[in-house]
Image 1 (tube, rainbow, N blue to C red):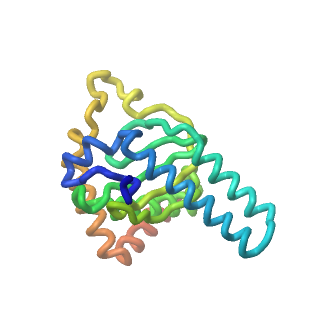
Image 2 (cartoon, helix red, strand yellow):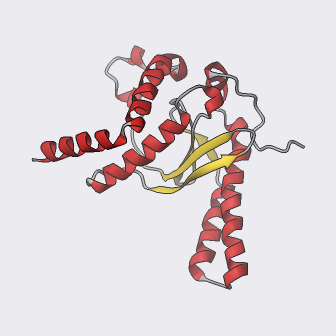
Image 3 (cartoon, rainbow, N blue to C red):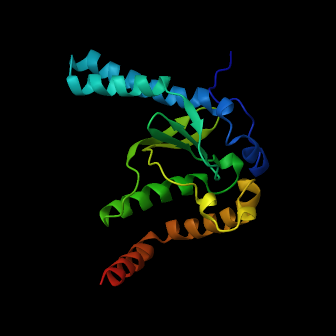
Length: 200
């Protein structure tokens, strides 16, 4: 039996593109994330005694660990539906640049959207799993909607191999995100001015 929950070798972008949408590859790691949270709350009951709120948390994570895992529209990260939630596992550094930056940018973007009254999925849990690779992950509420590709006016424009189509854009966005993260103070000032002006 392997010491890891994720057992595929990742050696660059091409490897990542082959496995990022595979339920079979990701299910053991996803279930481990849910079980780990359930055990954490169970240990709190052992330490602090019975508590209705903690017991509800245990039930929540146990139920989630038994939920069916389904594919969602593929992008560049591993994204799946489990129950009424979305689990998103970000590409590790071994797949190429961008994964950790994407993770922090998404958390920051969702937080900023909430502050300004934009309706976005609520983050239930986020963190890093140290397995065969260090995976940043996020659990969010699932909001039912239409796949963007189905809204495109030209059926032939539907993305069938998202990794191939977005590889160059991902590198560009990654470079921009890195530049922003290295100069957050200037970015914050510019962003604040933009939001105030657009709201005026």
